[in-house]
View 1 (cartoon, rainbow, N blue to C red):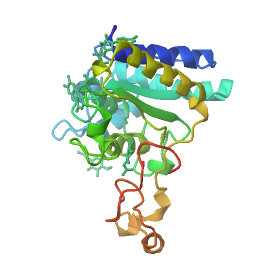
View 2 (cartoon, protein in one colour; view 1 turned 90 degrees about the vertical axis):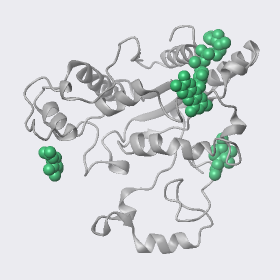
View 3 (cartoon, rainbow, N blue to C red; view 1 turned 45 degrees about the vertical axis):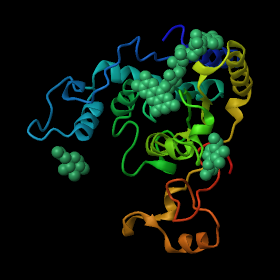
Length: 269
Ligand SMILES: Cc1cc2nc3c(=O)[nH]c(=O)nc-3n(C[C@H](O)[C@H](O)[C@H](O)COP(=O)(O)OP(=O)(O)OC[C@H]3O[C@@H](n4cnc5c(N)ncnc54)[C@H](O)[C@@H]3O)c2cc1C
Ligand SMILES: *[C@@H]1O[C@H](CO)[C@@H](O)[C@H](O)[C@H]1NC(C)=O
Ligand SMILES: *[C@@H]1O[C@H](CO)[C@@H](O)[C@H](O)[C@H]1NC(C)=O
C-alpha cells in the first residue's frame, strides 16, 4: 500500500537490486486485486472430475494443457523468467515476499498467491521437493513488518519464539518447493518508532541488500536422510549419529531436544 512503511521497504529493495543489474519484477497483489481463493474457476476449460473436485490434480492437468487462469499463468511466467535472468546475466533473481505480519503469518492475499501459483507439477511434485525441489536454483526471502516488539517474539516473550513462527512458511512452503531460503528481514514494530529510527531500519536494509545475492541460505535437512520405505522417517543411522548432538536438527525436526539456535533466523548455524 502506497505510503506505508512496507512500501518504503519495497522501494529500497527494487532500487538496490536494479543498481546491481538485476531485472526486478514486482507483483503488487492488492493493486492486481489478486484472487486469494483456490477454486474451480482457476481452470478455464472443463474439469476432469466435477463430482469430486481435487484442486491439486485438476490444476496440474490444467497447467499441462494450458488451461490455467491467466493470473496464475502470469505469475508462473515471472517465476520462470527468473531462470532466464540467471542464465543470461549470471546474477541470481531473488524472490521476495514482502508483507505485514498478519496472525503470525502472511496476509490472506499472499497465502492465496502461494495456494494458487505454486501449482502441483509447476512448483513441486512428490518426487521433486525439499532439497530435490523444482526451484532449488532460486533464492527467496521473507521481508516483513510486525506490530509486536522483538522482545515479544523471544522464547520467553509473550508470543513465543520467532524461529518457530517462521517454520511453516519457510519450511512448509518455500523449502518444500526447493527454494534456497535467505534469512528473513524483520522490521520490528515500525509503527511505534520515531521517524529517525524508521529511517535507521531502512538504512540497515539498504546495507544488507548490497551483499544479499552472496548470502548463504538457511540450512534444511536433505531428503536422503529420510527413509521412504519407513514413511519418510529419519534413517536409523542418522538418528544414531544425532544422539550425540545436544540440539535437534531443526525447529521442526527437534528430536525431543533443545531447538538449534537461530535455526530459522540466521544462515550457517
Ligand atoms: C489482521 C491483522 C493481523 C495482525 N497480526 C499480527 C501478528 O500476528 N503479529 C504482529 O506482530 N503484528 C500483527 N499485526 C500488526 C501488523 O503486522 C503491523 O501493523 C504492520 O506490520 C505494520 O507495518 P505497516 O507497513 O503497515 O506500517 P505503517 O503503519 O504503514 O508504517 C509505520 C510508520 O512508518 C511510516 N512510514 C511510511 N513510509 C515511510 C518511509 N519511507 N520512511 C520512514 N517511515 C515511513 C508511516 O507513516 C507510519 O507512521 C496485524 C495486523 C492486522 C491488521
Ligand atoms: C489425485 O491424484 C492422486 C495421485 O495421483 C490420486 O491418488 C487421487 O485419487 C486423485 N484424486 C482425485 C479426486 O482424482
Ligand atoms: C530464534 O531467533 C532469535 C532471533 O530473533 C534468537 O535470538 C533466538 O535465540 C532464537 N531461538 C532459538 C531457539 O534459536
